[in-house]
Length: 191
Image 1: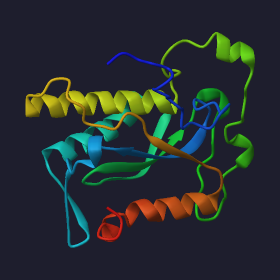
Image 2: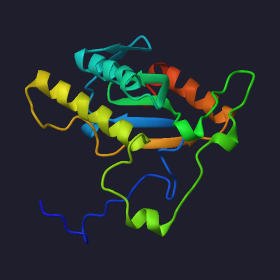
Image 3: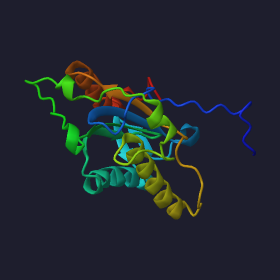
Image 4: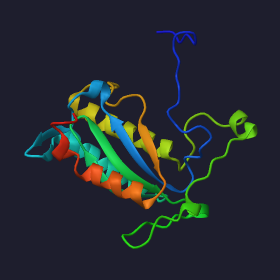
């Protein structure tokens, strides 16, 4: 299929002008292609990973080993999607973790920037050490390993994009963390 800008409108789901390589706390959701139940099943409100689900879990954990700018928080592999909270802690803009007793330091959260010089001279692809770079690498290695097992080289595993939410305070963080942890228990109501 040939790209036709009059028909094919690719709109970014990212927050316009936001620097996703800045230190911050992010909630991400990545869905399988066509919402296929690819990673296992829910039984008795618990997620039971199959071999593909174990690949997703292994590669997510490996992400923190190879990307020193991130720290993983709560995550869950579901039959047809993946949720996680991830902390980006780049050297120049360190973020302090929230605890039950201390809130997120909002002055350390990412700031909006939007200069025309940055937009005109931006290289293609996600910025290194950014949320997009993390998600792109993660999706790619999962796809490669799953397709090796299925013997389907190049077959899509994931939807084309991902959903993100910038976590801005402790209340938001607590609500999202509970949502991730309780996701299998709500499966019957929210597939």
